[in-house]
Image 1 (tube, rainbow, N blue to C red):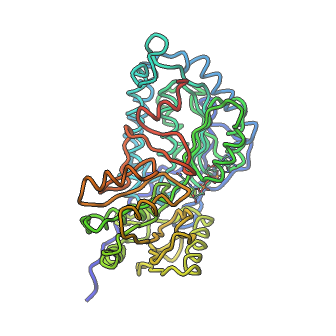
Image 2: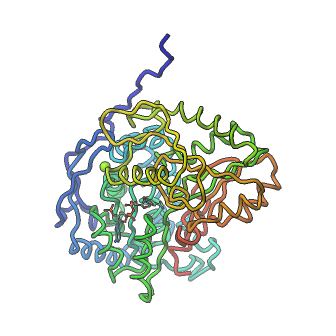
Image 3: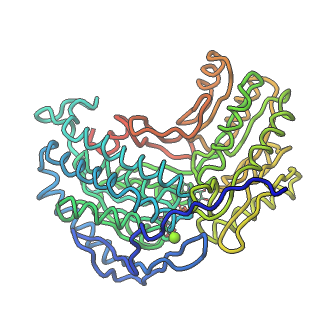
Length: 482
Ligand code: NAP
Ligand code: MG
């Protein structure tokens, strides 16, 4: 008998309202950038979605000048309650156009529609609403009353560069606090995923946001580099790889410009022998296979107590086997496409390093689509702390499993990483969860859950995961002259 399978349930791609071409957004208008146009592709098919005009270094100059003008003439002097109205309007339009944004994000990025629809876009809207609420309450954010009780002044012009893993959400994580605090911003989205940031610019224009307050410059790393090094900025906010983050930090040293860095991670997910195992399996699966593992806070190192390692491994393999890999637009898909050929090559290389260093590879027997960029859910067991699959961020659907015997050993192994962005703890004992969380050097520690995001809660890292926090009252501080 044929095993029971899901019928395809494909979301309508036409909802994305895809245009043949897109352009940079500077000083309130879409303009012809002077850079070489790029073609953005759908990683699930490798077909071209649209041509995107890119910025040149002179466009960076123009955008920074427009942002400065807006800061000095309209946005900076505007009362917080007025700024809030624009942000609420943008938040409402994002919510109203959520289906369009979700489908567009899935096409450009390759992530499952279920995730763009249920996580990326609603979380982006929530972040906008949250920060809209702060705009007239900055005097109560804990940074002092400031002049007239309006809180500390904004910094000025922000340059922001973001990666491709959560294109809309990362754009909003920069734009919402920057604008709520009274700054203006120039944003460079990632080369492979520029589309939702450009639709967000169009939404801002529709909301009547004054010209120059938000500028979006598609382009490659050279434009990111020209932007973050621009001497017309007051602050740089960067999310991406640790190597680029370090380079930016070196360049900004001594300039007096503010900097926040949200970089990579290699999070430990610790499962004690007293944990509810089925629940822990769900959390471990979500921790590493959500968004194809293209998540800086992914739980990419499973630390499981030795006494339950075998049982847990069996439960884990059985659960991962049920994940459906394939068409990101299908509402039944659990794991979508890898965002780019370069990222797929990197995942393949690091997994090969796991083999050659002696870890045991288990690959989900799931069928893969014939075309497009896909990698099957993969679990390495017998991983040692020195192996590359235990130390380097793979940024793909690959889990490394290590074991421990005592809580001290779990903590020591979890902290044995150059990173420190997030961690997970699974146990039936509240005291043990607290004991462990207090000893983990990670910006976020989830207990008996994973990957929970809320605009009220600060997110950020230690060590090579960067510095500064995004979200909540603490995140606002990075955009105020406090
Ligand atoms: P990346 O190379 O650091 O890119 C992040 C952003 O910076 C992109 O917009 C990129 O432009 C731009 N950029 C590249 N070189 C730059 C430079 N010299 N100066 C200023 N901006 C520059 O990271 P990625 O290529 O997206 O991913 C590589 C690795 O970064 C991943 O494997 C993962 O380890 C890490 N990562 C971490 C996060 C996180 O949230 N913490 C997110 C994504 C990636 P282009 O898009 O044109 O290259
Ligand atoms: Mg793309």
